[in-house]
Image (cartoon, rainbow, N blue to C red; front, side, top):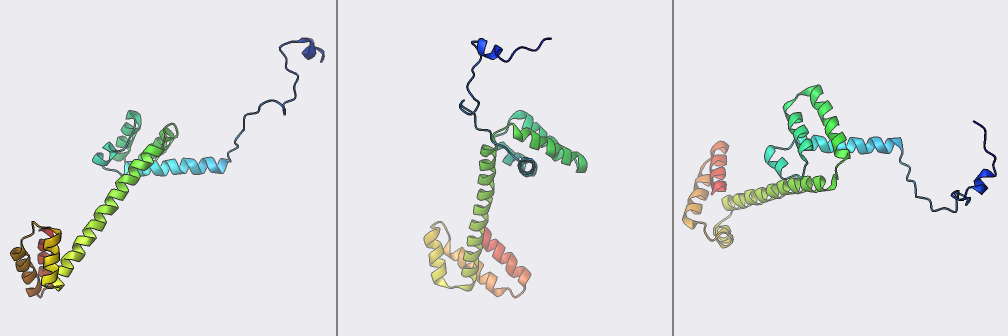
Length: 178
């Protein structure tokens, strides 16, 4: 095929002879290979967190059917197959908006942390009841109007009477359960 003369561009009305710098250029965002690997590793870690969730917790996370089936399969398999399945889950997560998933996981973790804080507050209250006097009992009754003063006093007395740590823990736990 014969080479066309350079003037041909000038003769063709469809050809735009403006330089490339003057045209509207789309901004090209260059991403390094290391950054791509870091992103893939972060998605794989997210996949691992999803695999470690229970069935009830998975229901609260917005996942499509294919991703959910892959997670359930990863929960069933062991070792190398699990590693490969988690990599596949990471690959599936590349095509999904990960932000709602991360928000749901944060809510689950935060809810767990809040439950732990409530548990610690109740344990502190139990310790104060055992070590304190009537003013602590009145404070508990003010906080929890359904609490029975007589039963609280009986439980506290039994917890104080016991010398053995095992029995004290049992009475403390019983007092905590009420």
